[in-house]
Length: 295
Image 1: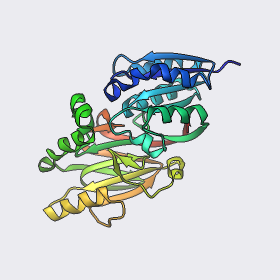
Image 2: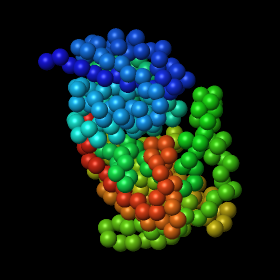
Image 3: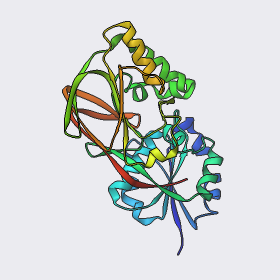
Image 4: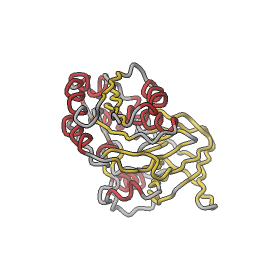
């Protein structure tokens, strides 16, 4: 039986570098697949629709783009109900998912890994029914990724994110919310929270000492940062957030297969670095082994 692969390319990702590689991509993928179909995404949401509609017609899909492109591809595959294999060639600015799964940032090396790799099951998250590959977050700095201009990302890379985030520190406001875990409710004021399945978030290492097993353990890593009422508490919060080994009461960390959040006011979420909507009630779940990732 002929093996077919759908190659989806985000032409805007990585300052257009993916477009210049298309002929080489087709050549390399042809070593593993009999037919290679190329599709260039045109707008946000395009990859989601294409992946959902055509997943059943191919044995594999390879998406070329950043974390947002990958998120759409995964969402489309899961909505289609198929078990198609997914390969990923990261050309975005941060590429957290690729870092966690050991996928090379070099296009040629990433393609070689796909051509010689085999699919492995990995977990996927869900926020009120919307899928995410590695993180759903709320609070301080979570809108940095999608509010930082594309031009700044292309010109300055990760520094663009840092510069945008630095402008937010003096504008921190408490987020009053309650989370429910194993039937127990905990209330408090926070500035940041995330449910993740990744070694890095925004290029910052959070779980660097963990092996890849925790990406497939059926649980999400929950991180909550309490609102700081003094400069010393703010310092402790920042240190505890970016240093996994730091011990501070300002940062709460635990693991869970599901968690619910109730907010006093509607709160904006980011999903894999893109705006995910605003909610007063959120139900986050881990879907174990939902994705067949070529590694």
